[in-house]
Image 1 (cartoon, one colour):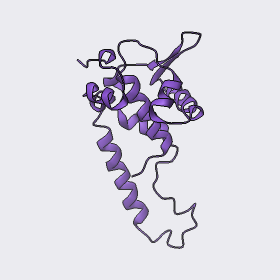
Image 2 (cartoon, rainbow, N blue to C red; image 1 turned 90 degrees about the vertical axis):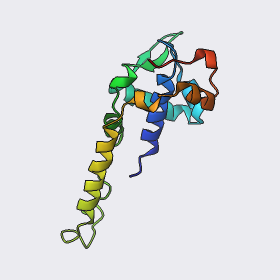
Image 3 (cartoon, rainbow, N blue to C red; image 1 turned 45 degrees about the vertical axis):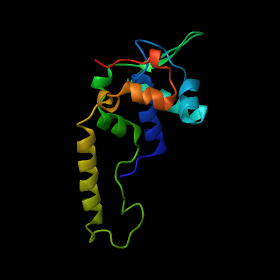
Image 4 (cartoon, rainbow, N blue to C red; image 1 turned 180 degrees about the horizontal axis):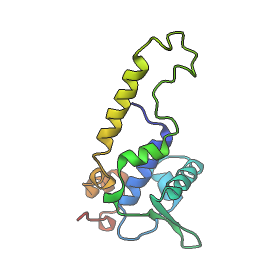
Length: 150
């Protein structure tokens, strides 16, 4: 199953925020620069993540963004389901497929999507950031600024 870039970037944003120390506020620009993503795109992602309660946004001169709850309470399945607009891999009726009504492919793909989501449901954001030292190294974040996961 392939996720949209929006969901991919949402997961990257959450990962970035999860490895930040304590209650440190990060900026949208930091996220955009770290992953070479358009700042405008990150603004939209942050907005959605904020609406869903995954992140907290703080306004003002010294504002920014941070996780809205503990990484261990952010289930990856929930994030994907909240960020993806369409989870059905194929919609035979929308595509006016001539096989609609007699083909079993849509049902097979739907079953595969459920299995995909079931596996995602076994993991949290904390599982994804178990090695913050390595992640910080990959992102070029100073070692003395990393979060040590308990």
